Image (cartoon, rainbow, N blue to C red):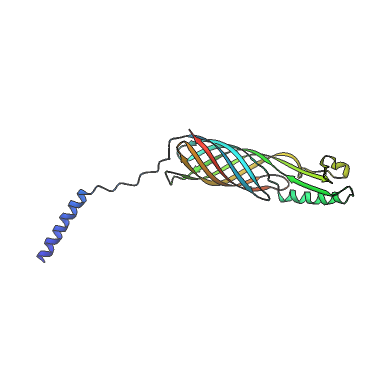
Length: 224
């Protein structure tokens, strides 16, 4: 029993000496942003998926508010956001023109959309070398519906009224409509350069059918 008590005392002394010799464990450092840059400008290129698959281009710029919030503005173009309703309407008029006996009918429709939007981004404070984020924007899109019709290869779009057809706003003309996007992505810095990859859901409030688009983009920017 005496020997056991001596052993316990010796172990206690050794443990105390080891604790004093070992440096205290440091607490995990608080998250720090990857640099002190407040603003940025960037250009992106991507692809859109909806009723059609097409391309998208944009430029944007923004600045941080605090360490995890950012406000930004964006100008861009989606090359074709034609809805299924517009496709269906052209597919009704085109074949009907072919029944007039004036030649073989062909038709097409394209709907580019230029837009401007402002938004906010939340940067998740999880990593020091890259930043995941979620973002939301609200803006205006200029939607340009461009339906065209031909008989025996000759464009008759401008003379459709003389053939008994009057195109409505669902097939031809420009309109400014509210645009809303929400999505997320990740940004990685390389010095003052910034690489960004993102995915967003985009809704344009067109008539008579709304336009829904998924946009996936990659971009390069400069921080300042």
